[in-house]
Image (cartoon, rainbow, N blue to C red; front, side):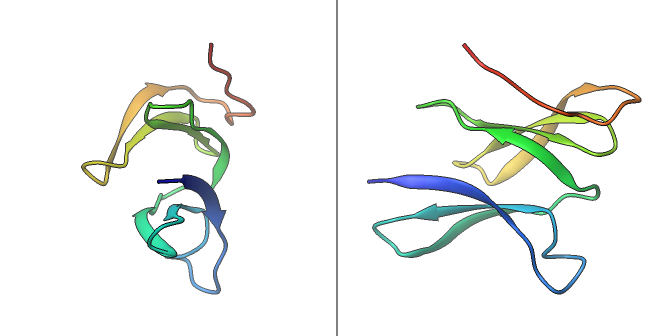
Length: 85
């Protein structure tokens, strides 16, 4: 089963800046993580959760199994990039 994450850009505030997870076998969006602030970067290490940064300075973790996200780190600066080992 293949899956990938991408940023959704829609015509409404609710759709803009959301992270969507698409599963190839279902050929549809199976997870959607809508954020209050624009998503600025994301990584999805193999076999792990999605980690992403936002314009309001939060680093958040999105769990595709529970369809919930939580804040891992908060700063006063715009999150520019994220890296993983």
